[in-house]
Length: 418
Ligand code: HEM
Image (tube, rainbow, N blue to C red; front, top):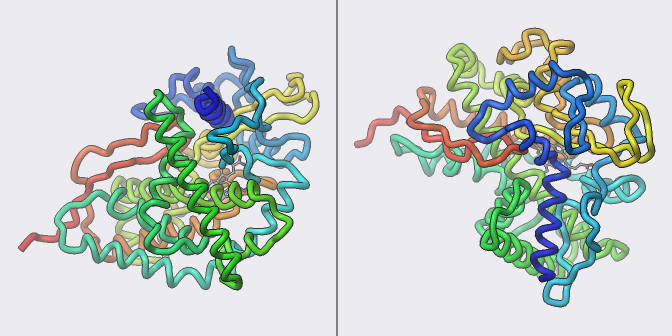
């Protein structure tokens, strides 16, 4: 049926986009440390062929070169599927938030759409937003302040970014919970939909989200002048409904779980490195360096894919037009050709800014500055409030190969219960 076809296709593409088949091929699984697997790829050469016609690279030099090469782009919509992209669900086409957004589009569309939302991510915009983010961090810390234990992800890390994006988009407070639910549903779908139940849930989430955005857009058109992203997009008469929805959904998909996992991974690094905690307690400004080194050492987005627009030669291999190359960003971040002692977590390293956690070239993460700022504000607030924070149980990893991080991280605060 059309619904299943649509969703099946969307998921297959999302997986292909983010290299999931290759992850399976390599035997990557959420419960397994991926870094030794990445080293085995590095050991096999700069550009490694796989049985599936997909190539892999763990080379920092090659990843950065292909990300910046105008002859390469993201996997195009429909690349893996012969099915027509315009399947109708209940008489209307659902917008695919991944493959219709500017994340996977090429110039000139990419340039046009990215430019519309770029003003919200300038250094000045970020400075104005810092105080709000710090306030949000403190509010959520207040809620757990007198609890001896809490879940660092569910009770804290997962709550800050959603609030920040909702604010940016102008989503009213009463809708934040639903907004978070849609965000999680869309991100989880990147790792595959296993059965009919999950497929229906994803479809329901997409449909609800679109209906919500249609209402929000209509409301903003009736009451123009707001300084949020949706108000600004709604004011562009020449923007199609699909572009407007895909752009808004992209900001949620790209900015939510990625930042949650940056915060979670950074806390895990601090808990595992007592010297780093001491430095952070003595100097809260050290949080910036801890966040940057977390992005290098254990990045939330582990890989992306690029394809050549025309047949070309790469590292001595002829790649026909459209051949997908999986760029293993997390592996590139530990390339010994660029990073000294690459497996060591060291916020003081001089070469940290070379990392590719935010990609490179024209698709360089638009929210990089915001993510860095949120990550540092979360770390500063957390360890100021709970200097004795400790892990208090098993870390539960997200069931994902694309996004790396914990989805449950029990911690004890050192606060005595009265
Ligand atoms: C693109 C990572 C946070 C918005 C990307 C890409 C990566 C990435 C790797 C490029 C993918 C590619 O080249 O194929 C991350 C990480 C984050 C984060 C690790 C947190 C730690 C955010 C936030 C926002 C955001 C907070 C906005 C609210 C975007 C957008 C793009 C993007 C709009 C598409 C850019 C384009 O195609 O021109 N991100 N991101 N990201 N990110 Fe982020």
